[in-house]
Length: 382
Ligand SMILES: Cc1ncc(COP(=O)(O)O)c(C=O)c1O
Image 1: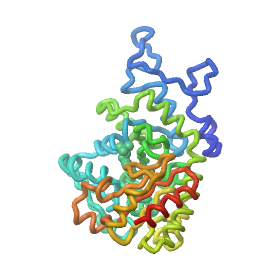
Image 2: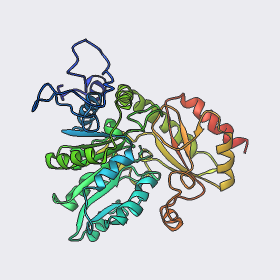
Image 3: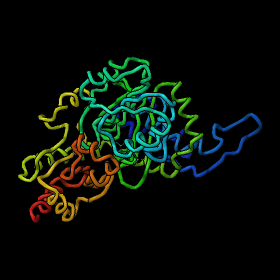
Image 4: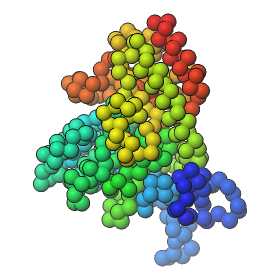
């Protein structure tokens, strides 16, 4: 597949099944656990589906192309992908991360990685001087999420790479913007990680995770970990994610357009105290966002006047669903303090601004007018 195509075309045409000469347009679901060998020492390239599966391999090629990387691995969930990355490190290693991360990633770092002797340091990545000061002789990697979940802070990926030099690994969670809006490998990342459950799948019907890299040594080690740990994506789920990606460009554009309209409406509402969206010119990271991404995405966080408003709004919304997760065609509203970030210690939540007045919206592809009308009725009957 030529890689000079635009991403909209790659989403539809990349990752084809080259083994299949039936003319099938869709990638077949190779629902086989194991594969027969022609003779001793000969192989079709497939031995056992934990290691390689043809449907999953098509998806991995597709994701690698979208991210502009050489290699990809498809995991059963985003957390499985992040968990495998953490197995690259050893006791005594030091990793610097964004203070603001998806709660599940923080939980993994605080409990599993900590138990494994890996020292995690959380910092405000918006100030490069802080990062420079925290690097020690044991620092092996920087892990960032940009924009962050849920407060939508943006980190300058190229600036981080400049500060850390070439020895340390730079890992970027690209779940919120996807390669449609942001390509971290081109900005200096070594590894891109995704919750494919979100925009890549796009329909709130499948869990998945991805690792993408262009580094041959890293992928060799990651493949070894992948087959050893065994958190691989099933053939059927691989098929569903391939299908979801075909409409990634359309969904990202429509969701972003809806998000822009909703941020304007929220910004003008008397009960809304703050709106966090990097596409707003007064957002502190607006300039960085514009520099490194081609869009701002469709995730919004906002703070209302008090907890009673939160309760009323969550109860009364009709189209917008009160549910965890993001990136699907349906607009979802999340209450981070009780859901995605409930496991963070209260002091950490307070420090980050994840309070009982904060709500997060993952804007879907419905009519913006209907979504705003739904918010209006939920706020007004309160
Ligand atoms: C930014 C981010 N990264 C990773 C994950 C974990 O992905 P999964 O739920 O697929 O395990 C999530 C889940 O919400 C997320 O929001």
